Amino acid sequence: MGFHACSTLVARMSLKVTILVASALILIGQSRGEGAKAFRDEDLELERQLKLLNKPPVKSIETQDGSTVDCIDINKQLAFDHPLLQNHTIQMEPSSLPKGMKPASDLPIEPVKFETIQCPHGTVPVRRTRKKDLIAAKTLSTSYGAPSNEGGYLFATVKTFRDRPTNFYGARSFIEIWKPNVSADQFSSSEMWIRNADSDRLNSIQLGIFVIPSLYSDDKPRLTSSWTADGHQKTGCFNLLCPGFVQITRQYYMGMPFTRISTYGGSIYYVNSLVFKDPASGNWWFIVRNSEGVVNFGYWPGSLFNNLADHATELEFGGQVYSPPNQPSPQMGSGHFYPKNAFKTASVSNIAFVDASNVLTEPENISMVLTPNKPNCYYANYCEFWDDVFRYNTMFGGPGGPNCIEY
Image (cartoon, rainbow, N blue to C red; front, side, top):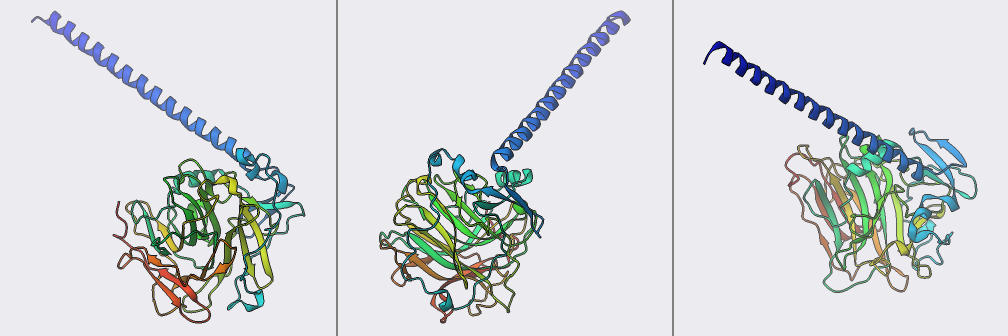
């Protein structure tokens, strides 16, 4: 092959290389352009959701923890954006409370008092949703309705054992307030679950004290709830991040922080929580009791649910943690577990259920089963009678650490 032929071949090869490089640059440019467009589209969608979630306030209040709480017209709150609640009539208070509730003066230990927000009459306080709250809520999977010690979630709980069919119409518990150590993308909670699992469409209401830095941008223990009518596939959310929960109180709000926190070996603080189905309306009410009486916090309308619209089939009480892969699991409860020391171990105590006659009943004839413990990570224990203060009590918690979660 002569010099001219070699020159021609080199020129052709150079041309091919040039074309390939140019094509690659075009593809990279297209990919970057498509990525930028996807980012812009996602950002626009978040802004659209924020406009829907954050209703125009009558008044706004800056709280000590840095949150903005908006006082929203009670008739214009987010719940009524739900298609099933378009013609919903607000229920301002339960038709009747469960029978068997003791007077506030007879409570064994004084429950914690909430820090109050004073919204005007006719409005309800709602923590303003930020863009990072929405991103965190999407990142945090809420598919923890059916506990399984896999996929980043771990549980130390006690739940009703379905050895014989039992219908539940509510649950009461004293949920202690602790501040476990968690990293930025973990969470740890003390809570109770009310669910109906009669079909593949899990219906669930969860309520408790959560530490979720990614959702709240701090490590404060906060009142947190979650609900679903389909196992968290398309329905439900944390707190008020979607239409559903109807708020009634004008002094308290979902996501509010607690300033009084239980201390290891010292003072114990708790929230006296009751969730029950109103026998007249079918709504699932959440009420809080303190030394001053009853706070009608709000309710999940019965129309949101299918199976749970009638009754619950299972109750559960205890702790839950979440950690992404390659991170040691966070603390749960007090971060310790001493089954014989109620002042060093977290608990959900004074467990009771509401029966079909709307009577609050201790579970003396209900079989309870513990979720499997993880040695050196978390434990749970159930005690029917500890003393006059801690009755029907789930003690739980632990330090967490590496090798706790199976992925």
